[in-house]
Amino acid sequence: MATDQIDKDVIQGVRTFVDKEVKPVANALEHANEYPQALVDRMKEMGLFGATIPEEFGGLGLTVSTYAQIVEELCRGWMSLSGILNTHLMIAYVIRTFGNADQKQRFLPAMAVGEKRAAMGLTEAHAGSDAQQIRTVAKREGDVYLVTGSKMWSTNARTGTMFGLVVKTDPKAVPGHTGMSLLLAEKGPDGCIVSRDLPKLGYKGVESSEVAFEDFPVPVGNLVGSEGKGFKYIMAGLEVGRVNIAARAVGVAQAAFDDALKYSQERETFGKPICEHQAIQLKIADMATKIEAARLLVRSAAAKKDSGERSDVEAGMAKLFASEICHEVALEAMRIHGGYGYSQEFNVERYYRDAPLMIIGEGTNEIQRLVIAKGLLKRDGYVRPKHVKDD
Image (cartoon, rainbow, N blue to C red):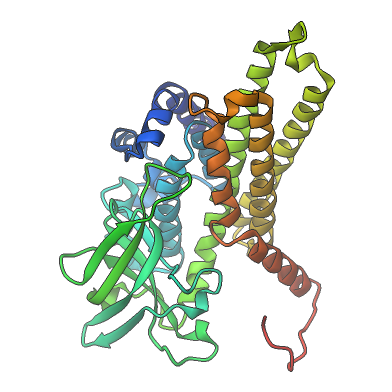
């Protein structure tokens, strides 16, 4: 069967899964803040935990472009499901791109079927956008690194089995990123405690946790690449993550638009459906146009990533624009619903609560603007004066 047809079949399968199995239960799971174990099990059966993992390691071997469409479909139903895949497949991407042969064989087949599930340990309480300021250290003693520190906002930390753990192997290195390394840390009984799950405005049902490490042993063989290169590796993984976030935003915006369009045809005021009022028609036109523009940016970024080229600018653009319009569309959908939009009996209040995550997650939009601008300047051949320091 041709690759294009396989991709279409997978996307259609996810679309059917969302319509038949996710949408009927999403609101109940959301408001109960309940982990969707049954849906996760179905995602395993569908092979989604191996979506972008090569077939030689038991995955589906899909492109980032197809993965982005899968994420969009999942988020039409419930955005939280896409987060369960995000860090998992980011770490899988890093392993297959920068890991050695042994690491690929030990981790990727188990990750492809969801037997091993990855969280990411990057953000810390004092180090979000400025990742170089992390304080989690890994001290080598013989055949292991002993990790001490803490991480915040780690999705999959409680329900997953491993971390892509960003640490300082040389805390005194200047600049800071040259002392950062990436470890594949499997959870064990000693030295690793998921201390709490952080309460959130939206993005319910999936844990975002604080994790503490104290002399947590990680085999030296689980160091990805070489010491001091971890920042480079995780930034490459974050390009996949930003495509995921941008695709999430498109999916949530599409769900909000679909609900608003349907409601506008059913709700009547002044003797006619509100979709016949020009004020509503203007909203509908703007919402649809922004969603389509965001979708095209996501596909452009995903295609650039698939080409093997650096895609930080394209992924940043997609994430920036898609997340901003998602917030706008969710608010417009709430306005179209009027008072009902503020009620938990309708889905639009959920879309409105979920939308801000995409503006903040995987690097705030303020950071995205800096990434985009600096990337464009580099492409244009601009060389910074040596006396100019980073912001």
